[in-house]
Image 1 (cartoon, rainbow, N blue to C red):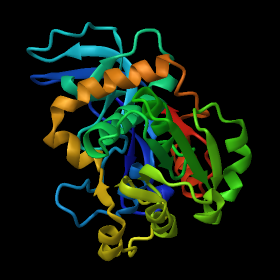
Image 2: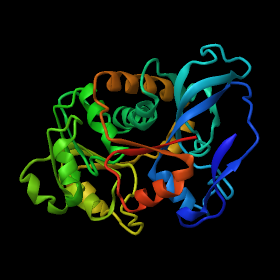
Image 3: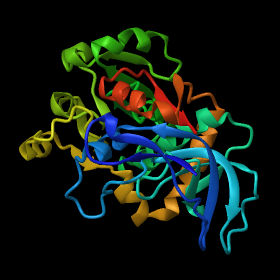
Image 4: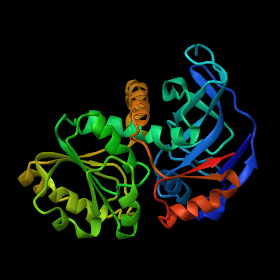
Length: 324
């Protein structure tokens, strides 16, 4: 199979297209002929070696890639709910392996996509599934509550407004950096309003939120805490700012009567696999309802270095996906 391999920890130049043996599915697994693989920030962090010293994290050489779309190539023993040739979408338990023309997935992490464009499926559905888990299992969002999404146009963040609407949110507001305001003005994502994150919290006056989704970190996270109403919940879902030293004052949590919880799909979903399939199905429903319309740039495996360079520059308003 053809794959993009991280040959060492380092800059995007460590990504090399290689030929590897075709894998075969084991019990409870499915082999997928990959047509599209999404590029995410976690791929950059793995490639850079941010988590290199943590147990279980990938070590070079490895194939990055959390999300794939394609068609079923072969079924492992005991897998009966899919058919060879069926279009599907999947996400990796380990967060790797997606930048390959053949991918092995656990059947529980696979969902049929029917006639959905595979580029849309891989760009939107896995993130929307993770958003569904975060909002239902961690934030416990209730109908009528309000949601603030930091980094509103980012790949993961962009999945939250549609799922929040699906769950009955009354208001969804987003924040972006000043350079993304023009793109925010034309987005079809179901936000009520998108504001400049540099102007927080003042730009939102006295408005407060029941749930804040923060994959950004740093100063944006501090402002988000100030925008929670009593009983509000913040979901820490990433660190795009790469401010690894940021800390939360626990007295602020106590005095404000707010909760901060982390959501890391790579840790949560393996421990709670029963939520993956329902989340994927909810995500497909949200996309079918028109809640997943984001900008998608399709590049080839040969352009993986370019894709990672663009991600590092934050030169993306939506998602980049790779084709073999």
